[in-house]
Length: 332
Length: 306
Image (cartoon, rainbow over all chains, first blue to last red):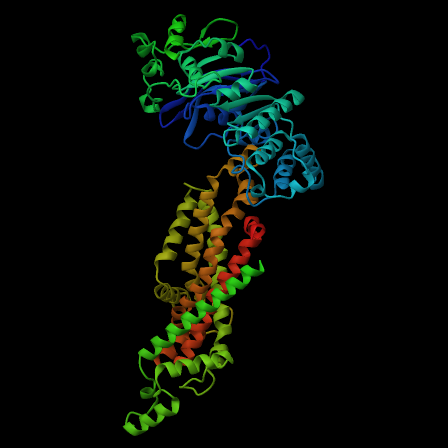
């Protein structure tokens, strides 16, 4: 396990099934208080399902078939719907990819922020609105009193995401799940929202589980990264260790595919051949085998466990960690 | 907002004018009422005399222009059968139809919308299946049949309710159910679809993520969002109820404008028919304009942008 003595969140062997296939398969990670853990991977790799499972908000087709999700000493998976309701928005909050769609279009933003406070604190309307106004100041929205009376359609996407962050943080949760929080936003706004999240985390000591497919975002904000591929963790490491020396072929190829400033604009970007297997195509071995330049027979017949590799907390699910140098050749 | 209101008003006038013209032409194509007014043994001269007295011997466009001229002074013409102003005849029947339509709306909205909400939020339960059965029945049984079945069952067999007439509140119940049943099904289906559509949206998940129960999300957020298509349907259904009243009023001998319409068509009393059609089209147009204003109340995107 990771080198965290008293983790805030520990996900232990989480497995989620849809239609008989394990779309999230045996995922374990921990998050320390105040730290940012990034779950990275392509669409459909199970990262969003993992995050919804933490709030007990899996879609009806998905079933958690194994594993535990502990928030400190509380087992979230064992909670009743009523208990989960008390935890959602208070102990664990979430912000979503589409901030504008995540707000009720017919209700003022002030009322929606205040609602999040009142449902947990039983405060009066006036008190909740004052708290909401204070939150808007904290998330850097100018002229908060006027904004409270506006509707979501009157605000930009970035502004709506700030509203969502206000809703998520108004009850001072210990954990914030951010599901692609900047994907739908303009690049300049992305940076602002990330800065805002960093600031709020350090001020309040809130831990973040950040779901993203953007390595740039990871580098910017994460302390630790779990790279997911087809429902499994391929590699998990402190962020600097992962970027410095990836220990899984998938991570290495992923990093090689990120454009760099010193690349010639005419040079082709590195790509990973093939496509992600669908859940019905999952074999018994490593799920990356068909696209991996290091593949051997063992990869196809036997699933690699997470091996400890390099510095503490760096682990990779690959039989060929010692051959990573070959990948760098392929990627370059 | 003002410009919008003026635009809607102009559209409404054009629509009513179009309906009026079509009805005028169709009624005149269907024949000349003079023959129905004279005795069987009337001579050709008598018929010709009455025809010219009533003005039916003139070209149709002259009659049409004269009719339009009268309308501008709120003169809707005189019934050729009863020899009293057509408008007075129709207006004397209007309160009955309003009563019936109101009763039917209470049935349609009062049962349809709650049924739709339950069908959308309790999916896969016994109560959902039961309601689906009721809704499909309400939708597929024609009004004349459901009216007769109701009369047979509650009027003749059980003797709970009067079989026809318009004496008291009890006599309103069966016609209201017969007339409202189809609308009730329409409201139930629209409400159900609209809510299911809204339940799949991100703000519902976000609402639950901030600690609201699903039913709180439904009552605080989903219903209002789901109301918009239902308002559209409501506007159309009010017009449909008036049209449906023609059958129900005949089945239950209810003295409203529907029954009057049938009687007037049979006696080729076109001026009366024209007033009724004009009234119904006016109600259609009016409800659709009202619906637009209700949208603006419900939806700030419409209210503030315009």
